Image (tube, rainbow, N blue to C red; front, side):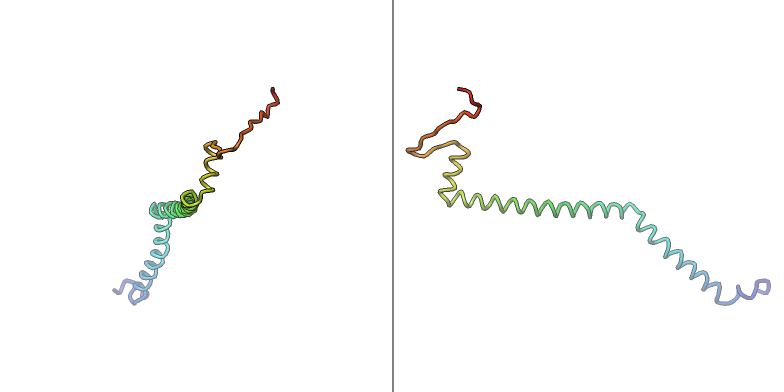
Length: 106
């Protein structure tokens, strides 16, 4: 090894190679992680998950509202009477219905 300069004969070439390898790995690994299709898919799935959580909360609120309405219709006679009057157009005994024409024609 007489032809090589003195710096190439000691532990320094190994240290420089190890340092270059570490620097390359520290630059390459984040590049591969953040530029890979897996990361893009992960971000897309995270966004979809957030949307589904929001949608599920909305549906849970709607389900609770419907559950309260069903309980009210099952147990409360005035609620049943209100639905019969408003949605089905029924009237009670002894009631008179007046129809008013709002167009103004006679």
